[in-house]
Image (cartoon, rainbow, N blue to C red):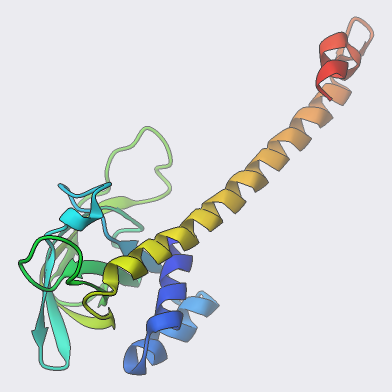
Length: 195
């Protein structure tokens, strides 16, 4: 959900025209699922090292490159893809684009094998001259990408707090019900000290 919310926020905050009309309401309502794509096989923590490139093509753009660790790869309907718009090093030319999962030139690898969370498909995304719509213009793309990541961080923090609260509730209930030496384990010294 965190990646979806980041894309929904980006599309509804920066999208215009056809992009906003097509994807804005669908992402907010849950009728469409979004995914954010910045990481590349050789550019993880250093996002300014991305090499996926977008070139203008009339009113649209064409993107070529490869993205890594794409959550919901091949499952999400729309992808916010971060790409460079010139061969210059750095982030001053980075832009953000909207790419439709079913567009020609878009494909996904088999999901990565992971130790856990197989319920979440994480793949690589291959873009081979794929059509795209500009969401955030060159020069503002890296800032928008980092803003989208911040949205995801808030979601992940909220989810983590919810999981922690539920774990604590389950633990307390268990400690109140589980008996040893004739009384609930929460009443033993270690239980009283920690509650």
